[in-house]
Image 1 (cartoon, each protein chain N blue to C red):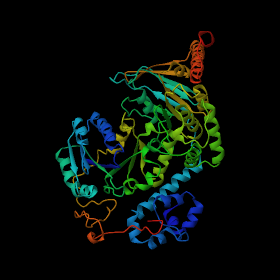
Image 2: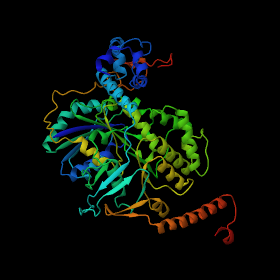
Image 3: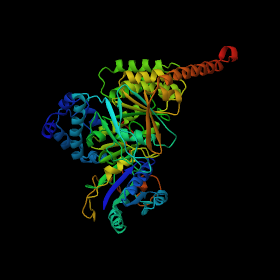
Image 4: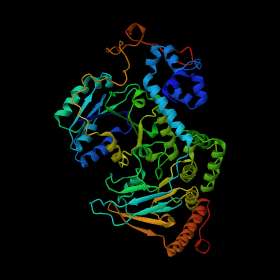
Length: 233
Length: 338
């Protein structure tokens, strides 16, 4: 079984791109499974189910979704193996733009969209900068020039990645993407001992533990204060 | 530049040698200010561990990426890529698997090909096959050669040397910029040397194409549909590196479509235009007819059709005149207007 991790900001088109890409896999007789990670709510599993493939979803609830992801990925891999899929895809939203659930030696795909603003590539951290493939969506509704400029911006923060344009609505580019992400020679049996590409942000403060009250008296642990005296807070 | 050189020369010297690397440092949130006389190795020794963690800096990734970036950017400066001047399409199959019935379609630079066929017939798939330089590995099994050869994998994935630029009907500007700022941004990203000259050239052309003129300080999001399309076409024709332009309809308002196509042809682009409009369809040198996912046939525009096109254009002109009269509160009469 091969495994790929897909992540990207909310509403960037991850699910739409994956649906079109998976359809191409199914046409070629490749068995695909999906595990969708989200925070509070998702009904994307229903969409994936419509393709007739095995799907599971994991909601992190009050936990950081990427921490939740990495705490569960080994179990997810074992589930995929049980389901006898050829390719297991995990999909997760990069909610704070800082995290990335990418694992060394596992193909990492980041999905971002043309509408998200010219400085977005700079704002997204390791999720974009350490991806192997960057998929840019919503290219059908912005001008050619903006697409070119946006692509350049992505390239300047991640010159190594293959950058692809995929239209999540009509599937243009999805077939091509499907040829890039699946490696049939890969046989992953466990992720035990593998490592994340980049450490997730450290946080253990009173709010992590359920504190709701505001004010210094209620704050303990890893707390940092904003600097409002200078310009570069 | 090799890794050892990169790590040992001062950051200031690096910026002098490859000016674009400064932006790369900025984009990766590397705090280099005040340390320009340090080498990269020394810089990372003095940056606080906490800062590295805070800015999510991955030192190893940063160093590998900057090497890659320098190589990539240098390749832009070395040579403009060999100009593609020929696209050849070899047959694949219809949706149901029956083989397409044509030998080969050859499209040369400066040529306009229209693509016609009912909605959902497979026009987008044909455009996608060309964009991807299909090598019998797409659902249609078509083969597309560029300058008579199959593209190497790295050429197909190259983000900076994209073969195809696209102009479709529902494209809009989304950036909060004026016309001038927008053109400067695009020209800068394309490493143009004389930016002012380039911006002027595109601005003047776009105004020639647009029915109603606009100024350089108009926000691009406030341009009318026709003005936007005019600016997009002028910009794509003159500034985009892609040798092939795929157009999905040009609406019949606020833009001189004939001049727009002429501009693309004089800029030596290969133009493929999918359309339902007879005027646009007949402006092509050839037209490809698509049905059930396959290319049904390829037809040359006949001399008779060219004459019909002239008639159609004069009808179109009549419509335009009426439109303008109505817009300015005038009455239409049979005698004057038809």
